[in-house]
Image (cartoon, rainbow, N blue to C red; front, side, top):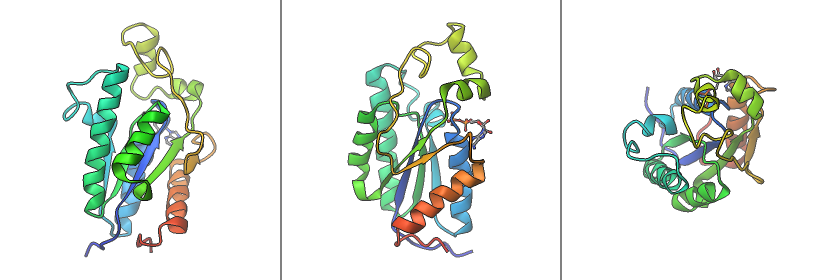
Amino acid sequence: METKTSAGVVIWLTGMSGAGKSTIASALVNRMQTFALHATMLDGDVLRTGLNSDLGFSEAERSENLRRVAHVAALFCKEGFVVVAATISPEPEHRESARKIIGADSFVEVFVDTPLEVCERRDPKGLYRRARNGEISQFTGVDSSYHPPTHPELTLRTEESRVEECVDQIVNYLTRTRRTLNLV
Ligand code: ADP
């Protein structure tokens, strides 16, 4: 299938661990590919195993982690990709700095709004259990804070909407606001 060219965009998913960012990002990349768009996912957890494996979870290291993710996203975006970044990015400053690096016109902040108790009940990687047992520290929602966006472009409530419905909401948003994307 021939791949279409289009202006790039970065969908920046933010939310706590277990909120559903990676799951939604992966489904969104699949959906974008059905539109024959170049799309790629930047999963914060995956990047921490390679590009960012030298970084921990202190405030300075989280900022550096997200600075690198934003620069990689910006490179793909300039090439016309739909980039779906899935990182906790717990502070407004992280998200604002990513918006500046990427360029406000290409940046879509999506809050994956899942309450802590739901994230903790899901605990897909067993990280909350380990954090509560004191095996890992500086864990967002346990001993490190998460400051939700106040004006995200979009908010997804994963308790109310299934994964594909969350993807629909993003696609609908893009269809409404990004006429340069070939979402047909
Ligand atoms: P994160 O990337 O935010 O840490 P994950 O995507 O790894 O979160 O895990 C989220 C978990 O929640 C998965 O097990 C997923 O199947 C589940 N889940 C349940 N409902 C939803 C939904 N509507 N959207 C996304 N994930 C959901």
